Length: 103
Image (spheres, rainbow, N blue to C red):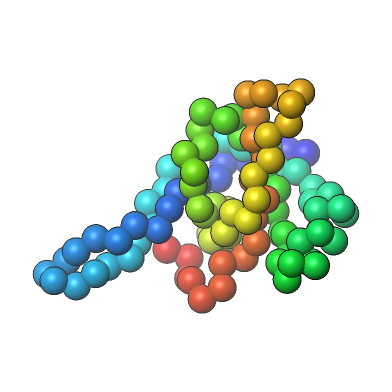
């Protein structure tokens, strides 16, 4: 496990000259990169998902965010997990975002 900077946020719709524009709004936080557990991988595979990244962050930094930007690539958060032993931390499990470029 190692610490790294990630960006988390949401897709936001705004109006620009009568056109709806979709953009990501991110904020940078420090996270602990963790390995995908084999049980996590197989459970997700049965649902047709492929978990690629897991990060652990402080609960207060998570605002029901939908996406993570890491190493220039955008990932969709597919699951969160709060451990009873680490009440101040939350795990974010993410998969590649299909059809969205790195914004």
